[in-house]
Amino acid sequence: MKKESFKMLLKSYYDVCMHMSNLHDIGFNFLENKRFPIDDLINSIFSQSILSHYTDEGLDWITWYLFEFVRAYDAKEDEDFMYPDREPAAWDSDKAPICFNIDTLYDYINDNCRLENNNDDSEIKSSPL
Image (tube, rainbow, N blue to C red; front, side):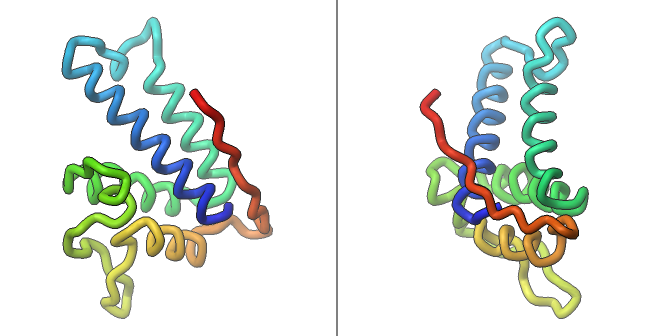
């Protein structure tokens, strides 16, 4: 997956999750809703999109970045999401920081978690909602 497509996919997913969380805060519970499992469907679509390019470990790194690293930082602007101004929280075996912004996350999972025989560098096209 191309880097710009990767960024767009992660940002869109993060935004949808934040909107769902905000709706939950005002009384709309889509997180545990059996009749309208919107949250489950969104998560499934995102996971399958990622798993078509990367391993389970890659998906784990991405969800860690989104919901433990970035969300804990409380990103409010797109720039905060892409390049959080905080200390790295993950290191490789040589003790070099990894996955501390969107570019290093992409580089790490592309180098270490890309599916074998997957040379698909396709772009995801943006569409207005």
